[in-house]
Image (tube, rainbow, N blue to C red):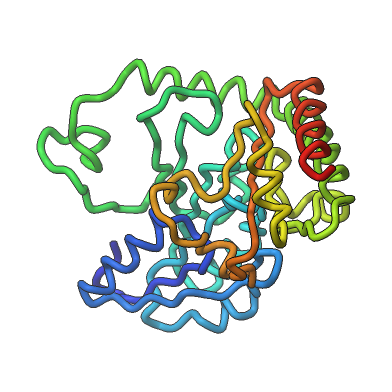
Length: 292
């Protein structure tokens, strides 16, 4: 990976642990890593990104849509900055494929990570988009599969299912965005009327383009938070990233946006293609009952 050019990588404090932990591992091998801070909405300062680039910078890795607070990064702007300085750009597009437009012809991105199960595809299959001209060192040798980038017997059913999920997701994107946004906004309008409730990430009503259409994440101060969380019977809701649910540590994403208060209860709601008005009504009724 451009090992002869330099050893500097730039990422952000709100990245998925799959990126942050990989960067930590690379630091042990002698790489230098700059972790950009974010503002209260989870957005980076694009000028700070450009200022962080040095002649030794080989890679910028920044996610398109945040998995916890739904913040959408302007990756076209990031791509322009990277192109200007001749630096490779990788984006974690796991949360955005099939939900908002993602066009590699318009974005100067060399690599993009994708996964099937976030768009109703099978679990256990993902993809790495690699632009022509990028040479990636294989992590698994033996057999020369995938043009020599990753050896191993291919999961054909998973690949076919992944391709179909992308096909359906792109075809139905406009309808899904309208559906998820409408239900998410209804839920936020109810929650925002409750004392001590604050939004995590951009406000979906005033800055819809900065947030994923299917995501709502809120913090509730004091006992009300535990009470509401405890009364959401039969509602699938997360109080932290599923990838760190086995840990009692507070979310590193919420800490990065200034929500490190241990008295806060955070709730993340995911709205999907199959979510109904009746399910949102039920969730709202549970919330109102708990508040009462």
